[in-house]
Amino acid sequence: MRNDVIQLYTVTYEKDSCGVSVPTEVLSDSIMAEIKSAGASEWFEGGRNGLNPSATFIIRRVEYNGEETVLYDGTKYTVYRTYIRGDLIELHCEKKKGA
Image 1: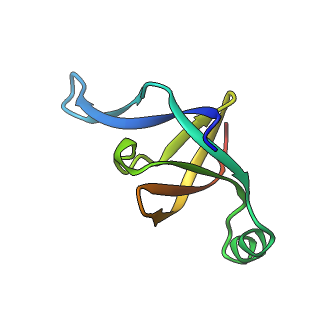
Image 2: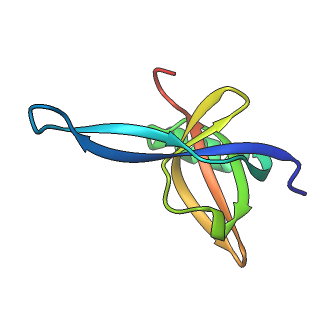
Image 3: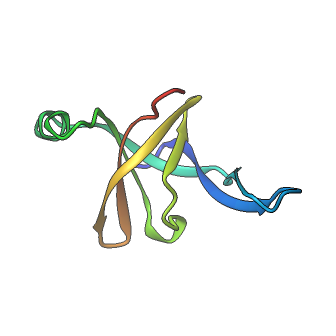
């Protein structure tokens, strides 16, 4: 059941006055999502690979365009893996470092 709200960050690049590409994060409209904690096996396996799995966000596939950052309840999460389930997609995330 999707009863929580998340937002996705899209990164765009614009050139500054020196011609250097500068990234800018643009926040999407609100998206309904189902939130799940990272499972034990995901947590252990992720830890062995230098990750800190925190949450899985399940949304409709049509609402996802490869974004790498999720905002949920004031916290930024980094997407490290996705999994497609029919019309849905799971975004497996860890809390964003430095945020």
